[in-house]
Length: 259
Image (cartoon, rainbow, N blue to C red; front, side, top):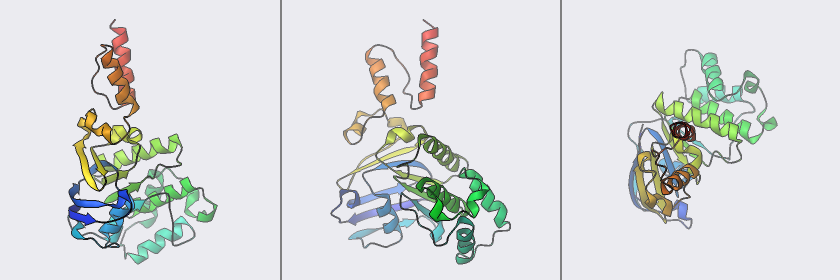
């Protein structure tokens, strides 16, 4: 499912909520976005804000639960995950054959065990609440995930698991994943596209293959692996343009062995 911006103009005092005649389509895959608020994307899509001109829409008829917005501000209608799921199943009139199996599969994908089904939300940490929100989104079979600085306050272990889940959702289930963040370093090896906004304008829009383009680093910090490989190049150690540190380390090891 695609999310379409067509000649969108929106005025705001915040630079991350300013849009100047933006036309762009978020396609299936993982898109890294900087300079644009994920909350704004969600509010414009659901027409919670009034545009000066243009429109934001989905490319096909969608349900409200086809789009999940995930941020640090997590809230639920009920007291625990099981109650929340049953509430949403009834609210959206979902006709799943095996609710229990679907829920358990969603728990496993979010890396939670069964005890979280009936644990009170008030007794959970922020990271646990985030994972519960992921469970809800997975259960609802969300088509578009908007992660809005979702990685904040997460441990490195949780971030790595999140990345594996995002990659799986994209590669195996063809989901549309939008990651709004200021830290491209974290997500470099799972990104398909890079989209950068500045002062309401779309200033960079290329695939991950162009991550070594110096133009990009006028707007965001250069990832450590990119900086390191450029340093190696300057010392006449020629390596491919790696984006995965594990692959780079293998290449360095092979290079040392061959000398």
